[in-house]
Amino acid sequence: MVPFCGRLGRAAARPYRIGPGRDDLLVVRVSPKGFMSQPWPMMSNENLAFQTPAHYDPLNILMKPPLQPPDSHHLSAAQGWLGLGNQDEANQELEKITPGNQAHPSVLATRLEICATAGKWDAAADTAAQLVEQERNEPMAWITLAYATRRKPGGGMVQAKEVLIPAQKLFPKVWLIPYNLACYECQLGNQKEARAWLKKAFKLGDSKELKRMALKDPDLEPFWREIGEM
View 1 (cartoon, helix red, strand yellow):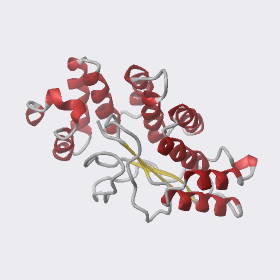
View 2 (cartoon, one colour):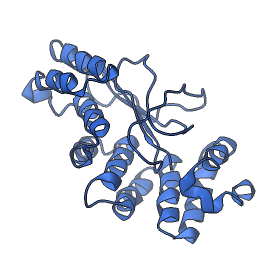
View 3 (cartoon, one colour):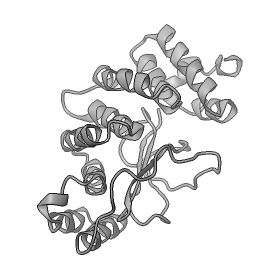
């Protein structure tokens, strides 16, 4: 499976993987101009930086009007502290943002990274759910929610799958969703369903690149011998 990737700093900053496991794939980038999200290819385990290939384009760029000073300054400061690995200072900067902007997608996404970095998956799932509520047409919000749902206490792959099933109907052309569903089904022992989702992902995305990625994905190990023929 492919780990969550979050680097919520300046737009030029490279993203990093956050969190254990390889169940799904996500990059979230945030700037004072708005919440941005982009699928990113898995290369190895968590907390490794990597560059984006040219053929991976953002699914959605801007979801809400940008924050204005001083809130935009507090957001930038929070992202800067995150870049330095200081979650406490980052959280303190977010708390300085006015109450009316606490639910802005950029703020929520940054708070989500803080929670994910700290392994606070209950809070991460709650924050991701707020993103889905606000931005139902943003596929990465749903994928983030599934990622956190799997890891939160009382969660798991069944619950994460239940998040992505309706998302797949809303976003039938996003390859990342069937890929993640294939990982969930494979780990649940549902190989027939996993195979069907994986084939769908290959059809929607760059088949050659995705097969190369899948062959490094431990969650899909039962299919490694047949992936080349899919």
